[in-house]
Length: 106
Image (tube, rainbow, N blue to C red):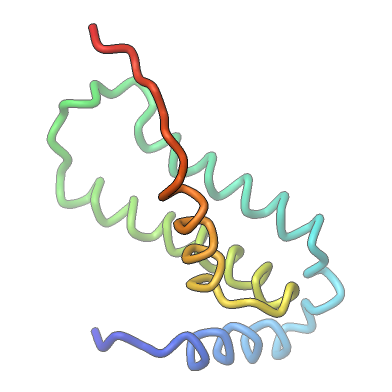
């Protein structure tokens, strides 16, 4: 699959939403709730699994689909805010570069 440009992807998402008349439902609070549900579905894929477990092809495929849902709602939220996801990631990365975390070393 070709690496699509963000502007192409967000336009396809806007068109999809418009064709279904969902604009009125895509408020920031509603999108945040939808994003939360999709993130929970990502977590559900790992429920009761050891972190060292290998994953089947089906589990990887399911994870990719759920991540697609997560990113879709994140893209819609970024669109509402007038920013691109990469802008936000870069801004946060610049903050994190100067932060330090301490982890317990057992």
